[in-house]
Length: 265
Image 1 (tube, helix red, strand yellow):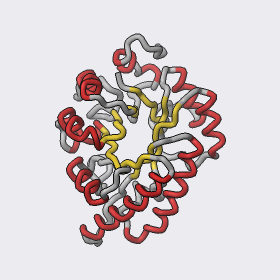
Image 2 (spheres, rainbow, N blue to C red; image 1 turned 180 degrees about the vertical axis):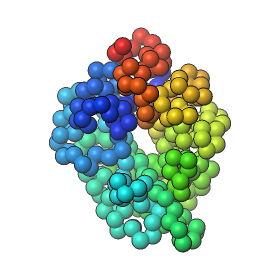
Image 3 (cartoon, helix red, strand yellow; image 1 turned 45 degrees about the vertical axis):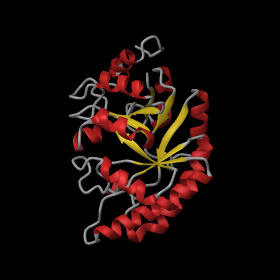
Image 4 (tube, one colour; image 1 turned 60 degrees about the vertical axis):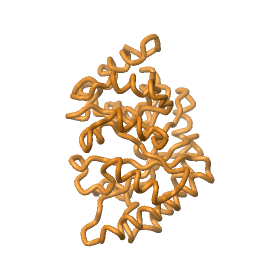
């Protein structure tokens, strides 16, 4: 069965962030991911990972002013220098944390900028980052996101992601496939994952509607998990959902998906 990583940005929100590592380990997770590490000292994060025997699976590049509503800067022509500085900062954190994957949030398409300028900026920024991360031994990912949760987001579907990968032409650029986002934008989940498998480096999950845990919505997650095994996906599956009640109380889906493994009740 898939290897599940707790997304500490979304899960265990009843606890201070640094206490979420121990809670995740207690519940049987062996990997963690979260949006950003940059508000914390690297040593503090390293200590929590080591103390709880957790693998840092993924984090994102700096994504601009999150509190002000920015959701990435990779498509913004006037922020290229900031983007490149963020790549360096992300490498520093990922290297310290032993994290082998970094995701890039494209950002919202700004008004008044031509489509070709946005794509050119995005491709050039991704080319820069893919090269720098490859030198550091870190895989680079881009993530299509639905436009219902983030209106105006630039990268919205797998066909666009494939086109961008081809334009960049790097063997160190992959897709982060979020089942929740792609169920909203295009559906056809398992055939798409199977077709894109060589290009998918990370999978994330949440059910729809509501973005809650698997089993609360329309997505047949037992079928999806079995398909991931059948087609040979060997990466992590990030649990990036909003628990309907408490995180630990809602992990019945994971106990069902990992029979025989230790997952706290």
